[in-house]
Image (cartoon, rainbow, N blue to C red; front, side, top):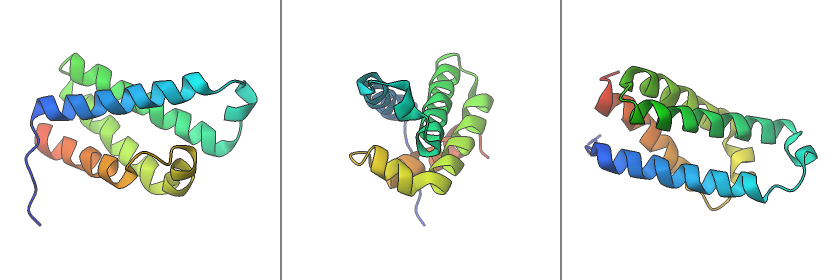
Length: 109
């Protein structure tokens, strides 16, 4: 399989766009009871992990960014069906591929 090298700018931009979309989704949520379901708790945790990735990339803490990207990838793998129901407009497979590529590109994991 041929791996396409991603520039750091493209990785940052992709994560930034994902974070904005996630923030807007959470902002639209009117009541806390909406997030009480376990699927939404997992989605909320995924969003927190993505925020951690962004924070670590911005502070140049690549090791932690890579560790969080692995955690986020696992979260997608185990919750992809519910994530697709919650946020059907996201390309979850592309997001997962980006999260797989991040540690390879930045941390050689």
